[in-house]
Image (cartoon, rainbow, N blue to C red; front, top):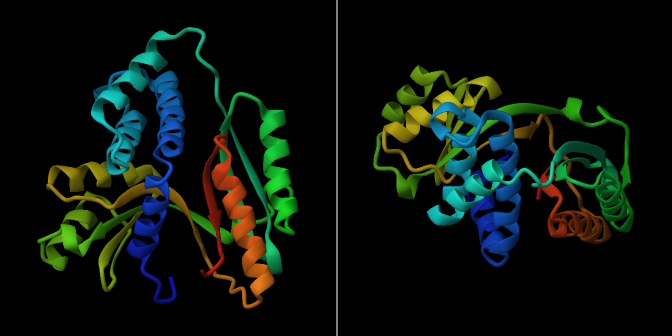
Amino acid sequence: MSGHSKFANIKHKKEKNDAAKGKIFTRIGREIAVAVKEGGADPNNNRKLRDVISKAKSNNMPNDTIERSIKKAAGDANAANYEAITYEGYGPNGTAIIVETLTDNRNRTASNVRNAFTKGGGNIGTTGCVSFMFDKKGQIIIAKEDCDMDADELMMIALDAGAEDFAEEEDSYEVVTDPNEFSVVREALEEAGIVMANAEVTMIPQTWTQLTSEMDIKMMNRILDLLDEDDDVQQVYHNWEE
C-alpha cells in the first residue's frame, strides 16, 4: 500500500469505532443474524458464524452481547430479513468506491447511499463499474506489538495453512488468502495463539488514486462520513491513497 501502514489505518478505524461502539455492534449484529439464518446458531457447524464471532471479539464486543445476538437471530421468527446489496460508484477525481450493505428496506438504503455520493460530488455507477479494479481477498493483519513470534515462523504457519502471501511492514504483518481459504487460515493462526488486529474478507485495490485538491479531499471525506453514519452500510472499500 505504497508505504502506508495498514495497522495504523486499522487502529485509526477502531478509534473511530470506539467513539461509536453502538454503531459497530449494530453492524456486527446484522452479520451475526445473516450468518445464523444461513448456517444455524452453532458456531462449531457454521464457519461463517465463527468468522463473525472472531470479528466481534476483535472489536471488543462483549461475549454476552454476542451470545444474545445469536440467540435472538435463532429464536425470533419475526426478525428482520436482511438483504445484501452492493453499490459501486465514483468519488472525486474518479476514485473508485464499493459500498456493501445489509438492509431490510432496499429503497431507504438506495436513497441514503445515492445521497452520500451526491453530497460528496460523486455518483453511483452500474454493477461492476469499479469492482474489476479490486481483488477480493482474505486479509489478516497482526500487530508486531502483539506478536512475539519470529517472522519466518509466523509466515510458515500462515503458508502451511493455505495463505497466498505474507508481507512484513514496519509495525505489522499482513497475511493474504483466497477468500475460500480465509476461515481455515484464520483458525490456524487462532489455534497457534496469534492475536489478530484485523481479519476479514475484503476488497484490495489493484491501484491507488491520489487526491491533491483540498476540495476533493473534503468531498471524499464527506462521502465516507455519510456512509459511515448509515446503519445499513456494512463496509466501504475505496482506492483513495489517504
